[in-house]
Image (cartoon, rainbow, N blue to C red; front, side, top):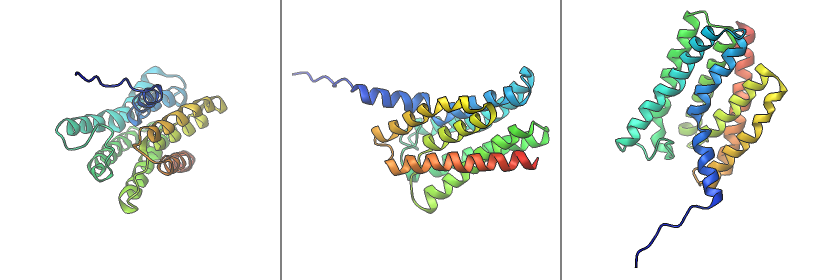
Length: 207
């Protein structure tokens, strides 16, 4: 008798959709463009220039390395769900985004763009320390979604709080798919919102 694979449940389908559509690389690619549009005074050229500097170095370059590694069997998937396998992906993300931040500084980019990149970098470094120093697999989906939402609220105002359900959705998805525990997504949410927000305020105020 032939066996057929059972269709995924609606819960799992919704969880998988959130995990892919609201993945860290998606937020990091889109956030600089959305923030850039406001902080450059709606100047399209500057928005694309500085937004793509952060988007490429913070999102596209790291994801290209991660996807290639996953295809070569270095990691379990492009989400790198195994904690022990996250060292190289973290290092690539930090080095690449660090290069992007340097370009923003040298190019005299808008202060709030520099602050945004610095906040993203601070969250990455903190997540690396927690992941390997404390051996706790913090959820990067939660870190990035929460941090991005807080920065958008700061830049555009309370209307961006409408994004909070998306943060909740992606956090739920990570637990539903059993890639993270509730504690890991809650910790990630707090790290992204608090550290990301504080660093953004401090750097923007200092420049």
